[in-house]
Length: 399
Image (cartoon, rainbow, N blue to C red; front, side, top):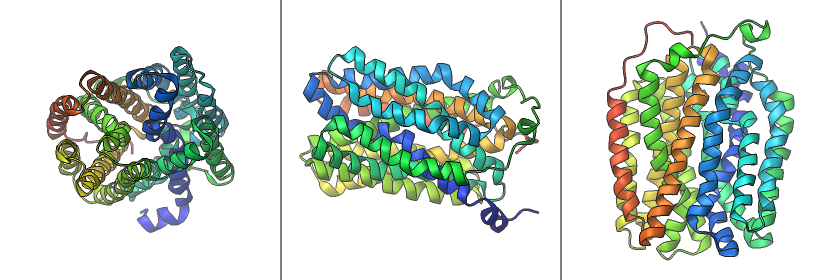
């Protein structure tokens, strides 16, 4: 019988490399608030116009993502990543070509979205799921810690790059930093246990039966509502704390606190997922944004309250992603994990794009985020109810 010690001795490079790889696709989202301020001031855009680029990316993801996921299930993680790393870095760097026309910014964002599919989180996690069983919860948590590292590192890196060289040079600099680190690691060390049916050209099971289950739809709806709120809060975290009188460096530090606590929440949840039922963990994590929004609404410039809100936001974000990824790996056939998980991620991504747009619209309309907090609170309660009524796991699944 495979033990956790055996798995880690054989496969430990996979989740660690995946952790670093996932930081790349997260760079754009978690520095959005910094670039939003710089670019809207230079070009005279509203926050809504800037955020519309994110919505466009998510719509493209919904259309193209499932196709890319079926390719992933057939060719495996390693080949998918080797083909996608360089195009993604170029797509991120090309965001610096914006010259002021908002339609051009949207087109650059669309091009970036098309380069995203080869290096999305499903590509990184897919190989880890194949290689781990007894310690799968912790292995997935280590992979997804990359999002927390991105939240910690990229805002500080972006802020320094913007202040030193301007926003236009910051995008290609971030792309270069990631590419130099990750390309050699993938080429030399990212070697998952090969999937037998893919290796021998056998058919991958159809996705239809999985999509028709109540488990799929409950998770899609709950995760979509939560992701919309969580991403809206994170993208607008920097401008939110700036409105309360914090300077640029201190505001970036608040974003980094969110990243640190997303790592703690992710690793803690990953360890617990291997030992206890997921519903109590999920409900707890899903309700945390209510506390976050309450703290933001009443902070009145209080640094301790803003730090507490940032920490809880990170903890909630880290826990929720772990739970969804783990449930996906345990409740659906592993041979179609890439497709099922990508469907979740793409749906969540489109839902997430609504959060920043809704927050931007509320702020542009009223000069305050309070209206957004009221709407988001209702969404969070609804998501928690869906998790509470999630159907029991199936009796037999290939995991």
